[in-house]
Length: 478
Image 1 (cartoon, helix red, strand yellow):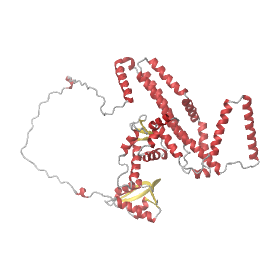
Image 2 (tube, one colour):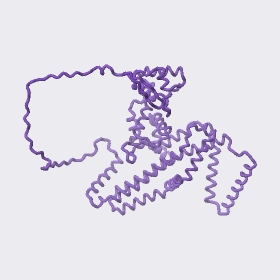
Image 3 (spheres, helix red, strand yellow):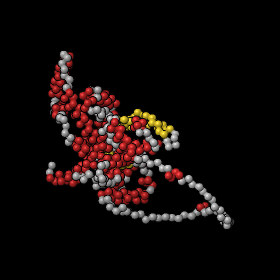
Image 4 (spheres, helix red, strand yellow):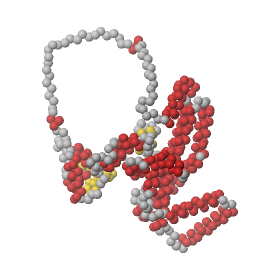
């Protein structure tokens, strides 16, 4: 690593720019909560705005002046701005709502920061075994002659026979708790790295895809020359090291037997008491689904290249409307130039409008004689009575009182439901008061929803009894 390389890295690498950002803790904390804790690869704009709004509220709580005063939408725009570009914003297929995902460099940064956390111990033995296994496999498949390969296999067969004999003699060869924990930590680490790699694979494929589109937009050659260039790019993607590795991985995922074996291994893994204690959330249980989801996203990028090719072949305007294509070509050329030097002014391009006014005979209305209006000079007064009592009967729910009710009951009980809270402090202002309780529960760290439904009887202001069926809301003493 030379000085010039490191200087360029410091000034241009996205991960280092985030580390130097003033809001580094807020940015990385939110990305980790939104994408890693939630186990989401993509988020719709409405979803990420709700998460960011709640996150900013929790950070600003307790300060007299907001530490992060801007709105969630403003911060989200900062994350996708060309100067930061922490998130990729795009429109998914057949969707009008933008979708957001982490850029590959931010994925790497999150993995690196997670690795900085002090571990109970470092799995050195398992890592060394992986290195030895890979070295032996590489040597076996490259350097050894056929006789040496046969001899190596015979030695491995002897070792297997000895293990079988030891098991038959009832010798205890199983892993102890330390080895189980070490192997599991290595599996976790490798699976996390693999899922993070999908971001970079998808980004690399997307870059190649953009080059293909640029080749289409930048050429004035005939269809045959353009198609030849596109086929070369597509074939280059498949024959590259990245492409060959990805397609081999994809073939593995498409093998039903392999996926069934992977699911069975994971189910058996979490039957072990040691693994249940290490990973109570069962984070690896959905590994096959996460691998399929990540691989599918990368595969869709390649599919878009084929779709672009199909549209190009079906484009009959190439011959029929040469003038329109020439105008489109000029616009595309200007767009490519502007991409490298984005204008700072909001109005950077004007088109002179041309409007033709066409008035046909059929559009004219038939003659209709004007009606004679007769006015009466007699004034009539009409008295309208308006009931204004509803203006003075507005429902006001005091949020502070409801918070105090929750705190009072938490002092008596370590855990209770919203139904129990209602029985102790009855809801007096109907559904409006119930909604305020739900809002408070949503913003509290010591409350959560259960799937189990419960019924709450509420008396309205008119004296009617209403039954509300809703998920159980539980408050827990912090």
